[in-house]
Image (cartoon, rainbow, N blue to C red; front, side, top):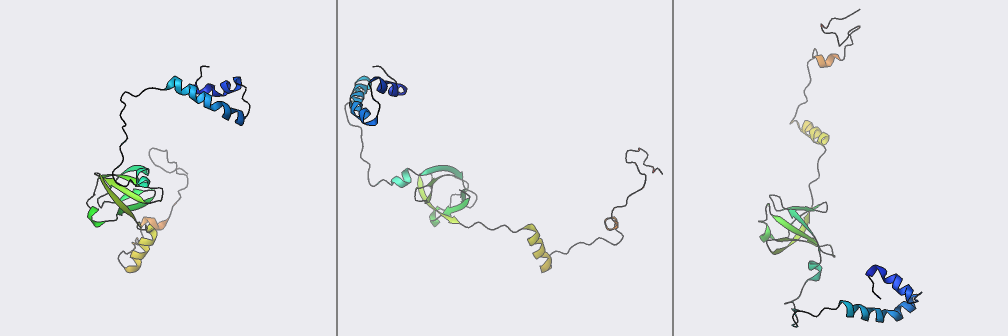
Length: 175
């Protein structure tokens, strides 16, 4: 039988398979036929597997990766938090592109110019409400509130004119 991956259910039906146990009995025959049909001999008989040198950190290797650009101080923003290099010797990363890696354990690493750099979270400065900041300045005497003169137009309020039509070109009032 010729089949594609989408025709496996139809082929099992033609073989009289109606449950999982029957499918498990037929499966070795189907796999053997599939391998005979699609098997390819390698161009080179030599084994190409290379054993890694030293220990491979799989957690770092399979980490989630995103690209970020550092600010003037080498700080990055990732996941709504801010990070800086944990080691002091890595502080010269101002305005460079960094690959941020978040491991499955939650550790944050930066990779810059082939170097692996551990990052530590820093607390962002809390923004002060502008009303609170201006109130603090006024209390400290740094800023004096400006009061207009008693005869200033802003102090008079809105004066409503009777019979005035704003579309009139010569701006005369009508009674």
